[in-house]
Length: 322
Ligand code: BTN
Image (cartoon, rainbow, N blue to C red; front, side, top):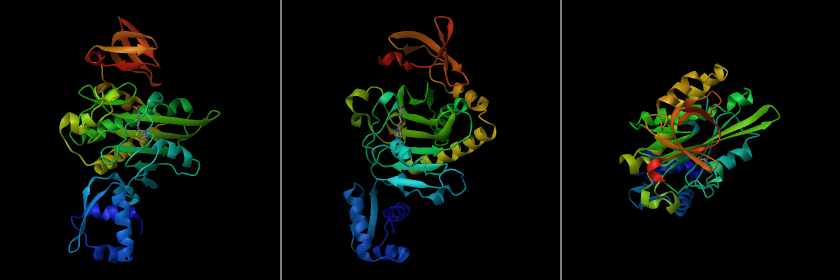
């Protein structure tokens, strides 16, 4: 028996007696107790009562309770690596990628060195938010594979919509609610010559974190689903939904040899900065403009001072937050 199985049992029940766990997994009471103690030491709050047994108090929506069985109808998620703590799910994905199968998922409750884009740090505290990576091994040309960033972005947005959460996508892939960044995507493509070896898509979504918990540097810019909408949604359910939506979209994308049209249309519908003026920085310069759409290769099309520009490297700033 693994601590993951106990955790899964605890999330599915209110109180679970030690006897039930022992019988279910055919292990001794001491073994059960050892696992419970381990989980408590790692930060899980589990209440124990001699008559009733064990009850998970926090975090009840842990995505670590998900197992391969939850993904059995999908092509992705056939192999899952779950961690209570890891440096970064993207880094781990990278380490195992040579031997990993397509669709392997890496999930963690905490990251000690969460990676953001442009070498930034990704705030990743225990029990609050969602951090996961997917390993893909598609056999399409490299220039087509960069489009996967758009496919995953749209998939995350559409999955959130199923929970009644409308987000905007700020180029290239910031997930926004009310001018606050509530999530980000780190896509990493590893190639050998002209061939892609593997793609790692890392998704971080701030689900329950409160503004006061964010580090000072991002307090004015970051938010979470809870802090912006007052909604507490289950991180396990959200992860499952994102993978479900992405599974469908990814298979469509591969089957159609990297056809982007549908995803591009959706991306443009929810693009941040289409209906308002924004600031775009490319290097030193900051220019006012409006988002027009996306190019097939992922570049941003923006109207800057009446001129249509293609932007490959740069960032959209939020006017009011500068
Ligand atoms: C960004 O800067 O917007 C991208 C943030 C991506 C964060 C996620 S959290 C899970 C995965 N593991 C990482 O280290 N980073 C990504």
